[in-house]
Amino acid sequence: DFNGQRAVANSLDSHSGYNALRFVAALQGVRFSQLLLSGGHRQSLAALRDSQADIAAIDCVSWALLARYEPDALRGLHIIGETPAAPGLPLITAAPTSVDRLERLRIALHQLVNDPAWRTVCDDNLIGGFSPVQRDDYQGVQAWEQQAAALGVTRL
Image (cartoon, rainbow, N blue to C red; front, side, top):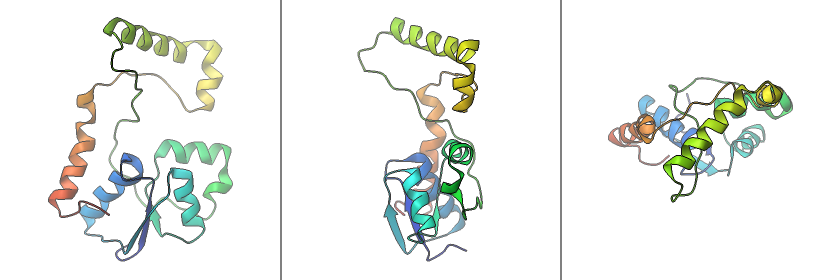
């Protein structure tokens, strides 16, 4: 139903705000008439509300946080579908970080999310735990880009 309509995306390097939409559009044979780059999920939602675009991909955490803390940002907008699950954003440290320091950071994050003193802060931010991921865990995200390209959609 969105063939020929206008899409809005965060940026060309966003998985949740661009790659996910490209993947779904490619699978469904949808070609958009226009692509607006907004700079972020909130701005993409504003473009939808202001009728500057017809469809966007918004990550589920952003949507849930806005639903909780700023429901007016979602007024008049509706979820029409979901992509397959994908890992969230990685936590990034400097390249020269030692393996020992990296392990200490992971332990500290694990302790933080399990410490009752921080439970309210974590709950308020929808953080239920910490699970370290490896680069290989993101192969599915890259596969979406490759599948879209195989279907002829290298850009929205």
